[in-house]
Image (cartoon, rainbow, N blue to C red; front, side, top):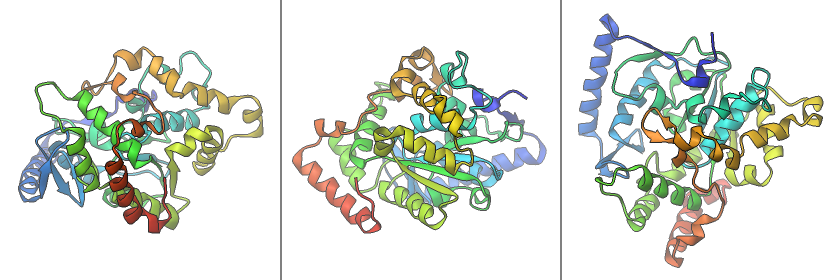
Length: 340
């Protein structure tokens, strides 16, 4: 079968019989659940709901339940996890190009990453796969292995099959200062002008209180950080800033973790450099598919490529904001040895 993860054309099982009843029950479960969950002002909709101790938009509640209930992990699966706007687009590209390098030569002119956005190639559980309004359960069994998926869902809320399998999880973390600014810009850009948006100050206050998509950011980060300490062979914790500073080293570390280390011949032949160039921010941003295409017919690809810089937050934060967020980071993450 063709590389279905390359085009996100995984098969979806049509609703019928028992499956139809199951999906209807799922919708009813979501409605009842939403009525009982705490809610706060949303970033991209009227409300966000606190589900399993993380904040999410209403459609993601059903998608998360469906994912938890139906996803069956394989032992060689790879999951790219992150908070939004933490370098996910880049890491997905690097992981795909590395793992699939024998099938798709990074220097070739027809590489999938030249014709598809990495979020299409490496689909999100909660958006591309189990999201949507068609209420059907996807059949992922025909995707060529190793399968690569993405998610913003916190570690404790991943499906039991992921926790119980030998699949690999790579988590990318970004300085909360930069992550906040990138996240705020992203939502401000993608929302229709008819919808109200949070001011920078409103969004910042919520961020420091942990009220933002998939937040609190500290519990999200700590979930994967602690898992990487407890199970280093299963969870690899990466920092965006460190990948930016030494992409070659971090890419080889990731390949080693995934069980497909680069050979000396591949390194001397320039393969690592070819992958880095193929997946570079500048290269991906200039591709036609990332200038005009859309993810799941919803979000334009171009919105995933703003600056890709570190330290841009200094252009937006007041001294009092710096002091407040620095204090939150120190109180929530400092004792666990996490600093930015």
